[in-house]
Length: 487
Image 1: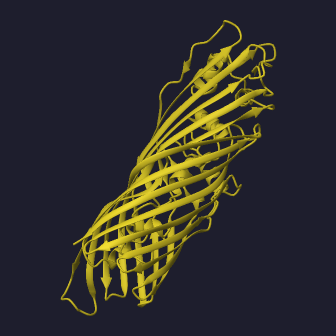
Image 2 (image 1 turned 135 degrees about the horizontal axis):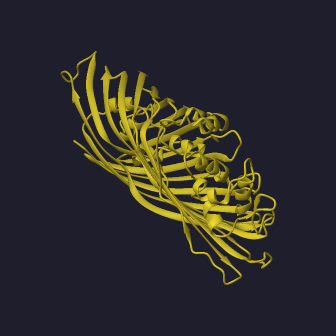
Image 3 (image 1 turned 90 degrees about the vertical axis):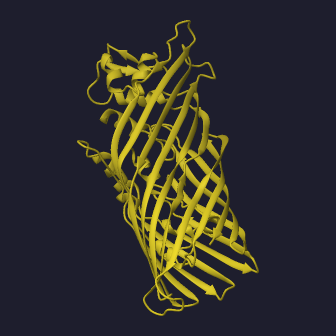
């Protein structure tokens, strides 16, 4: 496992590039971009002090205490991502579409005393359902020439560092990458110099990589909240998030200029998937000192994933000028079990109300991503956990939103800012612009929302000391529709 991990750290990129338990994995499952009802989404999720929306079970469960009746909600959504990359002067684009369920929930409210009762607990609400926290559906394509190195350069550098391995031991020590390259004849051993070489140590190849990911984090929430004299609301949520993450990449190098003897092209396929179920607790409070203002706060415990599983496999092939060819080389099927703990969160929120006509709300989220940790029996993950501590930080995360009533209609808007979580700047800030509208007819309501997000990142095809980064621009569009009934 350690050999795989060392190679993964060298070859992994800083965005959407995955291999056995890297710091990027911890960030991916710790950085949450809440989905949910259309009302919640159209206000950028700034609902921590507003309440009475099912999605607040995942952010500030005290919002459940503001419900006055029972409710059922159902939210399908359409998601698309459009990515562009620039690598060594070449520009590429790719996109992916997805249709999924963002929310489904049920809330029941019962009163503890007679109508009009003053003082004490006036009502208690219970709720359960699902809110989507992250969507991993994505595609990325990077291509361009490289006149300084090859992926095989990074492989030979690893083999030539420290004690030189016997060629018969390469496949055993590096079964998922370097061993495949050796068996394909892409790397060879020089017995006179006792080291390893490749045909293109200084590049001269055209490189391209296609990456496809899919999956999600869906959290099942069970919540309880109370209304104390219509002035203080408190709530508790037990969250059970479920991770499904799938990754596939196809990496190619070609001698398009016919300048490398013998070599024509190579292809490296890698795939893996991650599954895990965790648990966390959220406690929240909303205080309404006056009818025109509400103040909210919530604390989320770290999410503990005790049973994370990775499954991975790879293959490699090569084409040469001569008639001598090697069959496709396949790795064994790998599996690893471990634990993950994500950081705790604090969310502070504030909302102002203009009578029954509308509201303006905002919230600040504090989360320090360098607190995430991997664990496994007999494996302290010291290298990866040190990388998490050294690479990540607590960024500025803020969300603001507004909602206005026009007879039976609602008009909403919002903005979200998520600061860069890493200290080196390979992952940029993320911005969201949100909007939507809704209609309420007796006990039925329908809401619609649109969200646009944009962020930048840098991605390395392999060892960052050997290759220039690809500059990425990530844009997403999502449309949600919530249908609900009150009774």
